[in-house]
Image: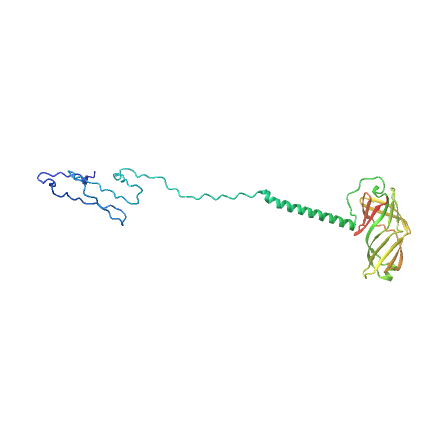
Length: 301
């Protein structure tokens, strides 16, 4: 108990405590207001029962209407123990969002596979079309890998008889008597009909009795060249080139302009080498100075 609240005994010579007589009202003690919400008025309880000597009465605790229970709180001496400290409140955290399930790779790969298949089909068709166009145009024979070694002067693939099935060349008539009279100049001609017979020793015969070429000059006129005669040759193959050595020739060509005979030209052997390829029954040649020129020969069986 607080020392200030202990009972004080009277000293000698001082009057003792005055006790109430029977029939007199009980002494009144000061009331202690209770700290609470300003809107509530504390109702003091009735006078406590008389005790002798008087003791300090702990004021009753008010009961609040919002308390979940009606029992009176425990009377604990102030500062009698360390206040209870509970664990800190953990704030509520919303659950992490669930990531959507990934789409199946198969569903994404299917359109890609279909597109790739379509592209491959288109490319295959394009390759076939290009190959067909090249076959129709008869591209010139360019230099390639050296053929298999052989002992004779010519490539064994060339030995045999060959018919010219296609031909293209820029023919230059400049300076000839026909050109001086007609002013033809250079004409790009196509045609065929020539025949070659080649032997293993390199001897060969060029037969022009059925050779016919045709084209248009710069003036738009139709120019025809009809050949006749034959030429004897000595051939030699080196790498992918044919070298010519002329012997005798009786070949000539008649030039016509729009169906009218313009003149005749006697031919001399042309000794310029040609590039060639020979695979199976097909032999192709091209001029070294004119990559657009070519001749195709098919083997006569």
